[in-house]
Length: 183
Image (cartoon, rainbow, N blue to C red; front, top):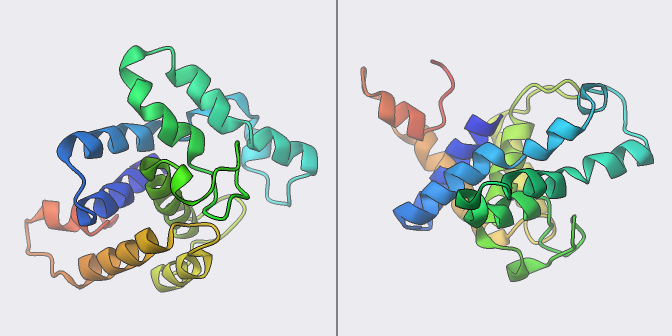
């Protein structure tokens, strides 16, 4: 999951012209964004039926637990905002703090889109993979409420452009940029 989140976050970061240092920080944050889930039982994480309110409350602790873990390494300090805030919602109804719009760090707004897209387009214990076009439409429906609307449009455009880019035989970098998982 983190690899897909990283690929999609980098695709978006490139398309908003973030610098190499910011992209590197984003890659590290993508790798670690769900590290706090180590504190949650696999029984809950892989549950096929709806979560109880108690289980959901436990799931919502993973960003803070992730920050607690990552903050032990000083070199990860710049990644903490992405780890902590990747479940904030653009309308302020997310967690753990309820930040709104541009109060949410850019890195976390990027990770939210990349994370949701990965979750929707991957088979999970609780859901089938959604076709890419349907997942992009779901992101569009969440623009302005769950996701930064400007970033959503840029991401959709980037995914569509990557999908339209032909892959030349032997050019693995092009297929990686396009988010291909056929390898």
